[in-house]
Structure formats: C-alpha cells, structure tokens
Image (cartoon, rainbow, N blue to C red):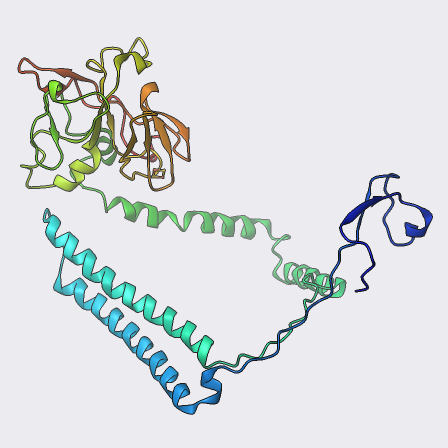
Length: 358
Ligand code: FES
C-alpha cells in the first residue's frame, strides 16, 4: 500500500477530495490514518539443523517416537494402577495412592503425546511458510436455497407437517426417552434413606463439640484468638467406620473469630455466635468445593474453584462469583467446660443446589 509523507494521524475535514474514498462523516470528525506500513512479507527461509544433517534428523525422529511410546506406557500404567491400588472404603491412604498413580500415568500419557507432537512439528515436518487466503464463510444464495429445498422436499415426502398425530407422538416419544436414565440414576443414591433427607442434614446436633480437623481435638473458645481461622469437624467424626468421608463432606466447618464490633448480625442470628466467634459451612454453595481461603483483614472467604467470595462479617453473603447463596451458618455456644459446641444442625442444607434445594 502506498505510504505518504506524513507520520501519525491527523484530523481532517471530509472535503471533496476524500469524498470518493471516505464514508460520509461529519466535517471535522474524520480520522484519516496516515501511518500505514508496507507488508514486510516473510523472513528469508532458514533451514533447521534437522533439514541439513541426516544424523540429527534421525535423532529427532527417535525422540518423537520415544515420547509416543512413553505415552503408551503411561496409559497402560494408569490402567494397571487402577487395579493394583483399588480404593478401599474409609481408607484415605488408599484413595491417595490410587489417585496419585492413576494421575501420574495419565499425565505421562498426555504429556508424551503433547511433547511428541510438538517436537515432530518443530523438527521434522516441513517448515516452509505458506499463505492460506481467507475465503468468505457464508454459503452462497444457491446453496442456501438448495438446503431449504431439501428440507421442504423431506417434509413433503415424509408428511411430517401433514401427519400431525404421528409428528406429535414422535416428539412425545423423544421427550420421554431420557426419563429411564433419570430413574436409573436414583439407584446410585442409598436405598434405605431418602436422598433429600440425607442432603438436608449433617452430623451436627445440639451439644456436638467443635473439634480440629483432622485431629478431632475439641476447641475451647479461649483458644480462638481474634483473626484466627480453624478447619473444624464435629466430635465423633474421626471414629466413624462407615461413611466418614460422606459425613465430612457435609459437616466440614470454618471457624473464625472477629472483633465483635465488626460483625453485622441480624436480630435473629445474634445468638448464633460467641464473642465474635462464628462458624460457617466450608462447602461452597456453587458446586461444593471447600471454601478454604480466609483473608483476615477483609474478613472475606474465597473459594478457589471459581473465585466466589463470601463476606464473613455479613453472614457470609456472596460478594463476588457464581455462588448463588450465602454459606450456611452453624449456630454455636460454649458448654460448661468452655468448649465450643453446636446449638443445633445447620438450619438449611449445605452445599450446592439440588433438585429440591434451589
Ligand atoms: S465451587 Fe466455589 S465458586 Fe465454584
């Protein structure tokens, strides 16, 4: 493109000399670009070492297929690890081993393919630059009309619009068809208890002591200093032999102590805290990640999964992110020995929404 003598941009009136090239604009507002530059084109082609040295080409080839073989090894190891390190119920160590070895195998499988493909592209595939001219994406009028004609003809021949009873029964059948899958999913939930009941209640009840996670040591109110935060589980959780992880996934709590003047408590909840100590569910109301990051200066809790933030000073209301509801608060008090205890279970279901909890 031709380049003129001026540099920078200048405002120019849309005078008659520009009229042929410049779209109609208000006089004095047209921005005329004068700093256009020439297309520099491609740099001269520089051959790679593998283009010139057959020994290096062979070495690159060996590297690429070794990476692909490593990927195969990773995949096979991931399958073997699944069988060699099975998940045992209530054995966190077994879960860890299972996840770690399957993860290592999968990582090797993916990285082997990724690195191999990149290395192949960079060292062995042709490196000549080429231009791919961009074409209009939309179909031509004739093609569009042809497509419409095909639909019209199919409708005509099948009688889809004409035979309304058949059409409506087909739509009904398609709508009902996925329902068996929904019913079968019900089989995944425990059979002896109603799933809504299970999701609506946790281990917390009146008098349950708040204990440290994972040691299970009860917490005295006097040990909770202003600004501190504790990961908490209900007393007795560590001794459960069945369903410990499921219970923990519902009952995990964060305990924090603020200056009592900084807490904006509603009338109804003014007795749910103890001298600035508050307890909230640790299960994010978005999709259930543990909300584990506490910023003591702002009193904000951050969920690391999708960055929802909750304001502890204002009943953990959502101040940012996709979570739709505040974190449920666990009402607490202190027993005769000075230990923190729950006043009751949570007064609402914890965690994300489900079919009877929106
Ligand atoms: S799970 Fe917490 S923000 Fe998504």
